[in-house]
Amino acid sequence: MKKKRVCIVTGTRAEYGLFYPIMQKIKTSQYLELQLVATTMHMSPEFGSTYKQIEADGFVIDEKIENLIASDTKSAIAKSTGLATMLLSSTFERLNPDIVLLLGDRFETHAAATTAMLMNLPIAHIHGGEITEGAVDEQIRHSITKMAQLHFTSTQEYKKRVVQMGEDASRVFVSGAPGIDNILNMQLLTKERLQQELGWEFKDKSALFTYHPVTLEDSSKVKDEIEAILKVLQDSELQVLFTYANADDNGRVINQKLEEFTKTDPTRFKVVKNLGQLRYLSAMKHVDLLIGNTSSGIIEAASFHKPVVNIGERQKGRLQSGNVLDCGIKTLKNAINKALSSDFKLKCEKIENIYGHGNASGFIVDTLQKKKFLVRKQFVDEE
Image 1 (cartoon, rainbow, N blue to C red):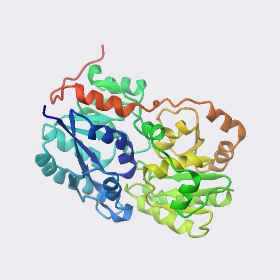
Image 2: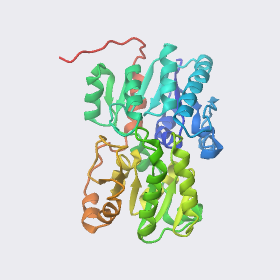
Image 3: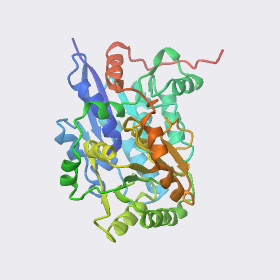
């Protein structure tokens, strides 16, 4: 029997980590064939050339697309999106997938969805229906929903939202978040092994920090904002492991500031371009709290029962499990102190992660094996 070709397009280290358990299951499926396209940050030395990690994990990359324009502006992001669209058309023509599997809300993901739609290729979309009011990801995510024929949402409420957008409820599935699968199924590194690989020691009161540009806010404020955040961290008792921001406009401003800041006290502060999924989750396990504005703080951290200090409005609207403290830069110090308090830590120990229990990838792959891939679809009006 001919296998159905499932083409995954990935552009970032974090997104690949979420795809990882799905890719592993497709790779061993009797009914599906994995096709893999690496784009954007994966191909950039500035962001760690993370396509090498994909290959080290045993996956064959069918196409490598260099579409990232090396400039820190909104115009450069638009050009990078257009270049991805143009190059992906040739890729899809050559690979001829039966379905294109996409995750989330990145600009290169939108390019892949647009290209697939215009070439009459069915699309399956993971993590639709979610709200992040502070970032352009919001519009991208909903736009991909309208281009997709199959939907895998992380909660029941997000399914309702996808259906509200006119999608057929019989083709919208609550799978949970695939990132949870990695937490439960990966053999995470011990603190000693992680310290050895980082060349850096965790001490008392440590934090994992990831902060991305808030793409719907005034970009001229990014430099002042990250400097103010770093001043709070400098004045705290925390030891901090930093990771790079994404390749969004002004992401390089943040990364440059992180590099400069960590050099002031290398024993207390460490920045890593790309931790990779294993080291990132291992760090999440061993630190006392997470700080920043990344979705992993909202989704995955709850499975570790870790306190999260979520800065600003980038994740505003996303459902939370009870371990997150939302704050502004001016209230960051108080939020950190509350997150480290024994009362809040005890609260976090008792929460249940609303985003699932580690079986999302199996559900998604099983559904792809069983479902027909359709190009045409109807808008379903609310009754």
